[in-house]
Length: 410
Image 1 (tube, rainbow, N blue to C red):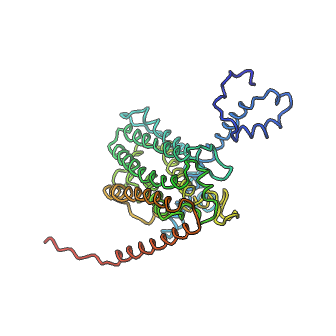
Image 2: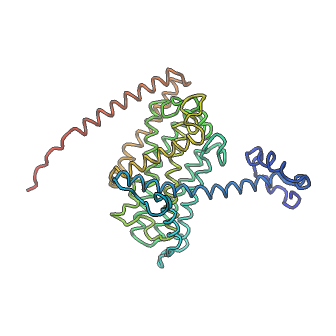
């Protein structure tokens, strides 16, 4: 096999990676001696990586099917009804039936639009949404690729989604789609700033962009999680999570769609399977940002108790991620949609200054406590507790105030 392929063809395959070790220790020993003697490790490494990529691409789209059904059930529970119950036992096959229906629906392309960009846009959004999963560590040994700059890769790939959104709105030749795409671009670009600044607080404490090293720094139990490490990372977690809700266009930040105003946003003119790609990407992004939040602030695959695997490993990571996904669903069916001016004010007037304050505070905290000790974590938890009590009292007084009667214009 190595004699057929040109020299240097597999030179870009990194030495010592998991795929190469799998080929050397598992694949080659199972081959006949005559084949194993001439089997190229580099070629086998590429085959294994392609096979894993195929499995990954086949399994990840199943997440949106589960999450869509979960959201419909959650919404039904909040509204005191049963939700989908007709297709499959307890309605479990309803989202699969909806997907089959979308496959057979008419694939409409606006005759006056830009056909090439119209066809390309959903694939860009779909591909970038799933490429993010390559850098998320689902467990200690469950990782597609151990990037040294994993969090930087995630930020870079997720930023490309804006290009697909603008292409979808522009190519549809519809004012509703164009308005939705411009809203979405402004929203995503704006909220990427506090989201990235919140990530910087984690990078400052850990000193690495590697997602595995970030998780390893939280291996001493619940109070070593970065959300409790300093009061500033505690605030940064909430800014990150709320900004990520805006990034994935979820209520109360679903201005790009805003069905009551602009029909369905940038994908108004899409139908059939191309619309399904947008829908799948949205729920995949929900899971991805929740998984990133669990990795950066909630210990990743590390458990609650040091030395024990309680709420740890792959099951623990999935539980933490789904808990954050459920919180997103809860907020959707609880809060009303913000106005455009409120959306931008929240980002530029509040989140960005607070995010800069968190960076400054994290730097000062690192100078005072160069290493994490029982004293530093205890002080952090006390400050967090006092801050929560103060915020609760301030919010309670604000809610208790009765609105003043307005003078009649007559």
